[in-house]
Image (cartoon, rainbow, N blue to C red):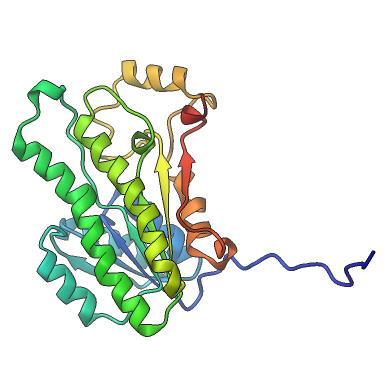
Amino acid sequence: MPQNTTLPNTPSFSLQGSRALISGASRGLGLAAAAALAQAGARVSLIALDKKGLELAASLFAEKGFEVETHALDLQETKKVKELILAEQPFDILVNNAGTNHPQHFFDVEEEVYDRIVNLNLRATFFLSQAVAKCMAGAGKRGSIINVSSMMGRVAGEKRTVYCASKHGVEGLTKAMSLELAAYGIRVNSIAPTFILTEMTKPYLTEELRASIIARTPLGRVGELEDIMGAIVFLASRASSLITGESIAIDGGWTAV
């Protein structure tokens, strides 16, 4: 039997020389994703609606010696989004993180709330991805698109009918995009986190809800921002070069039960 004469080398997790765009990056998961990519060597661009939040985020990066670009923009304004992407050099990495939620009983959901959640969580993800992927393909970049979904894109939760619908949509979009973009060498994957302690989730994470989450989570805790950072770097890097159309559950085992 032939013997290996050399040991294989672990593919690099370094993102040195790459450019990354992260949406909803002024705080929370988006800021953590941007930090992870910057620390891995990528030059990051932050896009969000909150201009002051972006300025604060940029200052945090500057304190660590990272230079970032910021773009204050409503991702639901598709025309402006396309104009921005066309004006930029093609990106190597896109993290679709921008999203929102408004927990309500199914009977109480009004059209305005439905539209706000679906338009940001799903529609904006679709058209930002389309704009970035076209530029990637045109430049011959074998890029990586990472959609921030949710474990609620796999299961369901009370008072989250619209949110679940949008995140199940993101999971389906991820798979469908991966098929169409594979011909261009562009990979598309998602991460599906559990409840992560962020500024957006703090108002909802009452002691009662935290206890319920811990009781249903085999690893026995609520998620922290750092829990998503390794997966972001992995999916962005060449270490995951044969992975596309997949979703990584970062949920402490919730959906394994």
